[in-house]
Length: 166
Image (cartoon, rainbow, N blue to C red):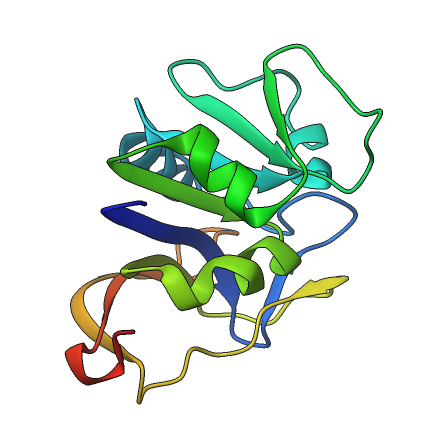
């Protein structure tokens, strides 16, 4: 159904991707990259991810996958299954933006991962396992040093290896 499903997230060295519904770090360049990569695209996310935004992000569709049949929110297109979320998203590039359960649901279908590796350990309550190198191949990397209270980080693009494609 999709010709460009990708996962986009930031992950600390110890696997943390979130704490109390927020990112446990502040990296302005990561937020800017997220905006550039998702602008104009449908984004699939879980309810908690949607609820973590102060308001819907401009210029993007918010497809919220939730088990709660009664949940609705202004700016959200509600889906109750993986298939329903993909049908709502339609053709073209689709960004899967979290959380961990949503990433796990869509990883098998993703063609690429846009990862920000945060080169530090953080306390958190949401984790992502490291990507399987037999499945994912790094195709681009941009490293950034630590600066003031901001940790070092790398923007990494990974693509599914052809031999692991379904």
